[in-house]
Length: 271
Image 1: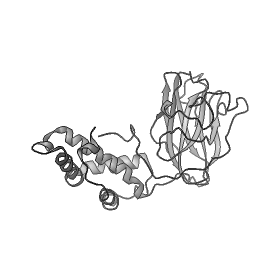
Image 2: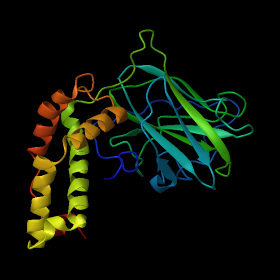
Image 3: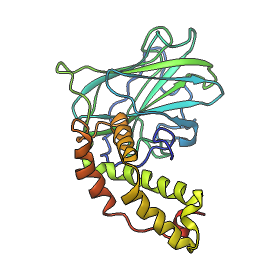
Image 4: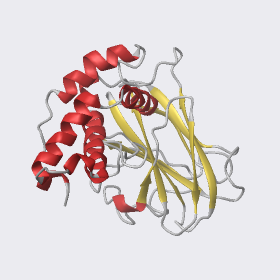
């Protein structure tokens, strides 16, 4: 089964409107190498390695090992919330000259048409980066991208996301229907894995094989599988159903999401 962290599925989150970019006094946004190597909306999404979701009060880590390497970490935020992003001295190799970019995203992944919302080069400790007290204009997903000033830096980094609200309430939540893209992705993987095992396909045509695998994944799959999906979803994003127990997910999310799926045919699922 494919891991969500390796391939982030689509979500129905709202785009955030552009805001004024943040830059340090020492270096302007034109002096550094951007993911696209060009203008603020010229993004080479293939240069950005998509990472796990980052949560408020949490951090993400990575390591620059080659030229023109960038790391992207998505997160959910409430409109009007004030937050900061910082490449921290702790967890970051000495001498690394980092950059931070902030983009809107609808699916947790970088695209070639993202508009830059904020940027910083040396606003943190030494040559490290910090985007301070950025205000989210609306509910939705954002993508923080970490790079190095000349795109040739080498070393480990740690980027931290902090909420600047007095009540500490910055994290956005995702409605249960938005989880259906995740559920569908899991079902797709389950069908593919089941077909490739071969037992399901004896004395069946390819289409019959996929239909049988689909039925198995929806009706007969081990309960542990559904519980694992529930845990993975709530570990990745703050879905509204996460504070409840597994039975809430099973009744309100799994059944609702799988009821809209169509029985696949072989050409639709396996090239």
